[in-house]
Image (cartoon, rainbow, N blue to C red):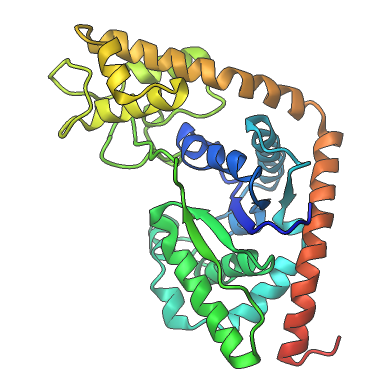
Length: 331
């Protein structure tokens, strides 16, 4: 896995099922990146426990997320794929970075404010200091690029601030990572409120399509999607619902907006919604089939995790040796 290419790191929490928004906005790009860069992809189970988890369910979702990554096209022969808690250096570096991250910086993080409001009965220290663990995730691997959406740039900026501070105090140690805003990543919006991003945590289950939803469910959700009163399939201002459905259709068919407008000229929204649902179901079917095959083979999934953790630990160990020496720990 180790080569001269730039290093890309990204991670997703196993805290729920993935939507087509996660797939079209992130995972599809990751697949392309593994051909060009040295990619390190992580299942961030340590981040997941900032919110109370049912242990058996967390373990199950971790297996499922590894399987879904691979079913979507991530190849463990082309990238390093591992589970965060399998590499102790993440927690080790997080503590050192906690001691180099300012209280004020952490208090400004929007995710802390959001999650504190949602989980008022469990505002724990990990929820507050998780950005130091996130910085550790990135800096451990001397990461060059972190694929992010525009709304996640705050985390990259904090990581750079912490790395810069450590480098200044202890001499250059960490590479300064940059955010790689998805070039081709589509921003998929809620089917019921198309002004906001599609989210798996939405209370309205008709607002999102899960990657593992069955065909009938996908088509039903598309049929219920919010549109407008114009009854014309065209991309334009004030047509958020139709714009979103057109974006989804374009992603799964490879057609341009102009081609879609031409295809549905003179046809109603009913025809269009059905076509979107069928295109999504057809596109997800091979991923779902491969996922079903992989989840039956726990031994294979564990071998992928073990191999990934070994490769990640090798890279992380080099960074940790430098960090420990520089802060004054005896090696």
